[in-house]
Image (tube, rainbow, N blue to C red; front, side, top):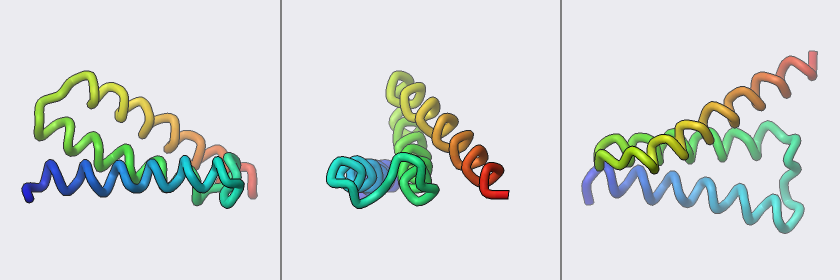
Amino acid sequence: MDISQLSSLIGAALLLFAFIALSFRRLSSESIVYHMFNFLGAILLCVSATLAINYGFLILNGAWTVVSGLTIIRLIKSRK
């Protein structure tokens, strides 16, 4: 299994875990943990999209990474 496939599988698993945990109320949409799963999963999917030269997938997951990252920063600042 190459790095593109491995990163896409792990990234997808992280995003799906966050989605399922949110859906079953195991995580809150305002928790840093939820957004960290989204952030890390999206980064790994960006790696996969870059290696596979899949621009649509890269744009989608790049935006997902930025939004998750900015939300993490907002949540950290609001705790101070």
